[in-house]
Length: 124
Picture (cartoon, rainbow, N blue to C red):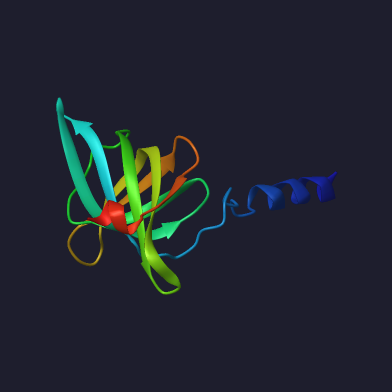
C-alpha cells in the first residue's frame, strides 16, 4: 500500500506536457479584431508558433478572449517570395513584457492556418 501511494504522488508531481511543440520563429504578424464596438488592428512580431497557437510581442495590448483574424508574413532566409499564413483565433493571455515595453499576447487558433503565397501581381 505504501508503495502505491508514493507512485501516485510522483505522477501528480510530473510536469505538464504541452499539446504541441513550439517553434521559435520571428515574423511580422498583423491582427484584426473588434473592440469597444469598432474595428481595430494591431501589429507585432511572433515569438513562437505551434500547431495550436502562437505567442507574439506587440507595443499595444488587446482584450483577453477577443476573437481575432491574423496574417503572418514569412520573408527572408530561404523564402524567395513573401508567403502569408492566414488564421483565426482567440486571445487567451495578455501579459506586460518584462523587461521592456509592450505586451506578450498568446493566441489559440480557432481553425488551422491557411497558406497564401503572394505573387508579384498581388504586391503591386
